[in-house]
Every structure is written in structure tokens, then in C-alpha cells.
Length: 112
Length: 112
DNA sequence: AAGCTTTGCTCCATAAATTGATCACAAATG
DNA sequence: CATTTGTGATCAATTTATGGAGCAAAGCTT
Image 1 (tube, chains in turn yellow, purple, orange, green):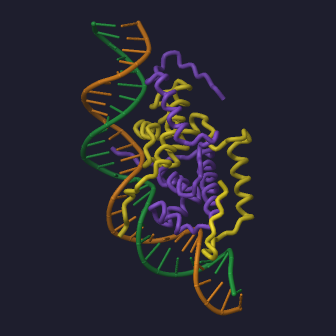
Image 2 (cartoon, rainbow over the protein chains, first blue to last red; image 1 turned 135 degrees about the vertical axis):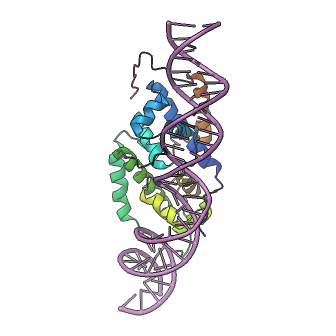
Image 3 (cartoon, helix red, strand yellow; image 1 turned 45 degrees about the vertical axis):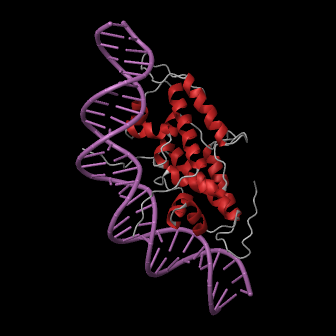
């Protein structure tokens, strides 16, 4: 039986979504754009933009990132080389890593 | 008439989701955890974790950020002070900004 | 190479997200 | 103060995401 998505959410996830929404809201206001304008350019409803800015955990990644794109927000762009470069870079690194994970020794090496 | 959500996606949104998925995948492999383990800890199915890592634009923000939380990924944490601090900070700034946007002069001041 | 594990993919049933419309309130304008 | 505009919230209708099971391909381990 297919189970619903009534997930317990961690505090981190909640606050991350909240922060993302605030970043988007600030960018929109800085551009002096209405929620309606952003919604039209992003191809979605005004209500959805509102929920994204509010930090609704149920909104899709595509919708949130699309709004960020419309506003020119460069998420994950920490070095200024552009998201394209970083995506390519990460992809190349990916080929060097093991494709699967064996439970074997089950040692978690924290790199934080 | 209710309309579908068959959105056209920008290249930026696509690549941002792709990069997020790769970051998550790398973090998971670094911890030597299986997709099944992550799914259990995040309270979701293995298939969903797979779609998130693949960069599926349809997955929810809550699901993606929850996986990031389980893996200890600190998204948006650029300064090391923690997501909590940044969220609070941004929220306070928010109170200083206008709550609505008037189309008035419609001048866009790019801050990028 | 054999054998076990992890992953990626499909299909389907169901819970949830998204939409468009509408309302009331807040806030900027004149 | 009156008017206009932006926003947030709600509701019904519909599309979509999610979970579960199963299968095939690929990856570790020995």
C-alpha cells in the first residue's frame, strides 16, 4: 500500500527551506517585481510563488529553482564560476567514486 | 478550470537540481551508506532518494533537504555560523523591507 | 567466475501538490 | 481619506509525486 508523504521533518530541513524562501523573497523585492510577475515568468501560479517564499516543504525543487533562475539567484554558486561549471566538475568527480556502497565494515568517516 | 503543472524548465534550474543531487550522492557514498539506509533515516522510500540524487525536478524540497540533513550536508551554510543563525538573520532583515511591491516606476536595480 | 548486494528502472494505486478563482486585509498612492 | 494594488488564505478540480513490488544490470567481495 502506497504510503503518503506525511513525513516528520527535521529542524534543519525546515529552516533551510525557510531561508531559501527568504532569499527568493528578498531578491524579488530588490528587483521590484510582484509575485504575479515572477509567477508569469516562471510559468506558475502566484500562490505557488507565495508558498515557496514562505518556505513550504511541499513545493517541488523544479518550481523553487525556476523562481530562483527568474530572479537571477545563483544558488550553489559559491565561487563565481557559474553553476554550469560546478555541475560539470562534480559530475567528473563522480566518475572517480565507487558506484555502489557495500555494508562491509560499515565505518562512517565523517568529513565534517 | 484547474490547469496542469507541465512546466518548461530553464537550464539553470535543471543543472541546479542536478548539482544538488550529485552533492547528496557524494555525501552518501563518503559516509558509506546505502540508499536504503538513507531512505530509512529520512523516512522515505529508496526510489525517492534515487530520484533526488538523479536531479529529478519533481521531488519536493522537504524530501531533498531532509536527505541533506540526514547526511549532514550544510546547504546555504556559507560562513560556518549555521543555518539557524542565517535564517534568523535573514528574517530580521525581512522586517526592514517593504511588505509589498508597487509597479510604480518599475525600475529594476540589479545588484548582481 | 560465482555469488551477493546495490542500484535503476518500470508499473500501478493513492495521497499530495498545483491551479484558478475569490475574499479580506495590508500597504502604497493620490 | 479614498482608491488602488499586493499579498495571503481558502476551496474544488485535476495533475502530479510518492510508495511498494518486481526485474535486470552493474558493482563489490572472495
